[in-house]
Image (cartoon, rainbow, N blue to C red; front, side, top):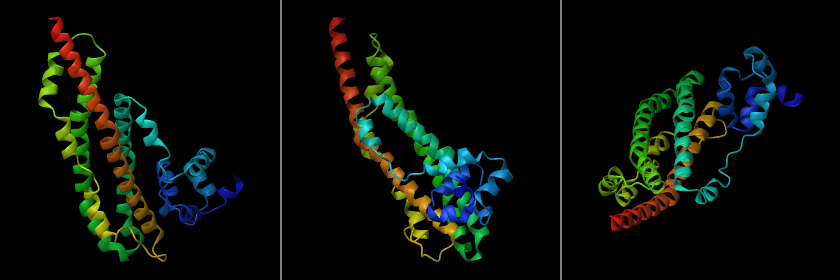
Length: 250
């Protein structure tokens, strides 16, 4: 622990770019404390060094076996997982990327053009992304919730019946947006997130974070397409069977 406390912020982030996000969540913009040690930053900002070091050491950049685990979960729990991911995207990941983009021009005037380009497309991306999330939660997720409640309640529901008649899982699945295309603008302005070794550390961190975010969006979409949709279709089939059985009793 003593050893890591004596290392500079630049040294720690250069070794693993994702550490910059951990520092950000503790209130530390890494580029404001480049030459200061972790110990000095903790002392200056009143941060518990044990907590920060533990978080820095936990940094991993892989989605271990999440998808395999979710396949065994019922649809309603998959929905809760996806809703939590939406929350993290909006409340943590996007604000952090926005902060990195805002800081580009402050770091080096050579990146003024890049800074201007990214600042112009990022707000539009965020607006479209949030709209997509709200639409998804208000339609697909709400539909799964309605089906699940109906299957766990003996009473027939006309509201559920009409919802099933008006909502098409197949159409939603076919039209479901994958945010890969929405990241095209970022790939264009960052040369597919490629940077030279001489690039400023800030650029390396920003490009790494944009690439991680795109990868996580693709994983997120894959969970929806390959896990949630099939489970939702199964719920829909069971709900239709239940309606049929109940209608025979009347």
